[in-house]
Image (cartoon, one colour):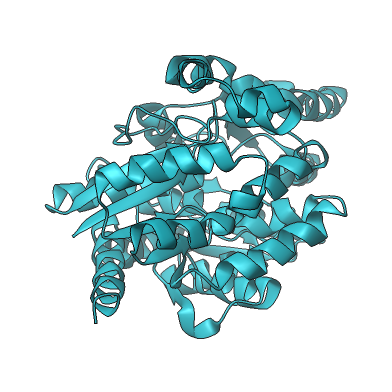
Length: 429
């Protein structure tokens, strides 16, 4: 059975969804399955070996031009190949990331409109490529591609599944009329999708309620991470207690809230440091500059290490150097890939009591939750772990063991493949 995964590349930054799709595909390949990972919009970027194909479909530059100018909808395939060049897309990737939803509403609706939208040429090119690959099942990367399901099934006569990847926050930020139209098209497109795969039980329920999906079609498959190079549990050096942050530097991930909690801890005369690692895009630079000004006013910049984006080796070194990790997201988080990585290294986490975090911490015993409305609550939760080393070490051991038992890439691959077999068999009954 041949599976084609479609993955929505995020341009120049590491993306949790891309990293999950790449890890899943790589693990399935390692286990001898016939799987192809085909990128959409941008080449994917991951801190592991990239197993996706070279060719990008629905290239970010081409679709933007086709959305705005009729000329590009009729352009010769030679120009299309140039616009879809991975080299060009990588060069432009960082300039095109984190486009505000207000500006991308028409494009989102066009993708969802499928053959009725302005990007019908891109859909035809994708179908031609898929016909050559002869898949037995196609997996869409998120609900924002639901509009192509009917055309794919009609042309290829194969089951279509869809990953649920946290698309609600983006879609909810679209202004009307684009938001209303997008939800209408998702509702229509979802009727042609055979099944949905959610990374957490929280987001399975959220998607059923928010998008009106049939709960019988929504399947929970736990996220899985690579653990073979994690090494021994984290054992930070003696010295100041170090709080870690590992995520994109942007308002949604809540770095400002962590910095406020850090200020409260320092005001209590607690000797601690803050270590920040994560991609900084155009929006993030302005956001970080404001946070940095606040730290400087309180003479705290010497107690903060800002590493910027890190590769895998640097990330693992970072995790081994911190006593606790916190990414206090502003919006409910559908996944939480980074806290799985922290716990796999034996680092306890302190997370807001919303989204997927209660579920993941309950499943692992690897951290603490706090009231997200209060920076003081975050400071208090961190202080508790700072003052109680036995508790901190126990949480670290709990999390590390739970990840290795229930959240590995092999487990994710096995459960996903079982679903593929289930839908593949049913399509031939």
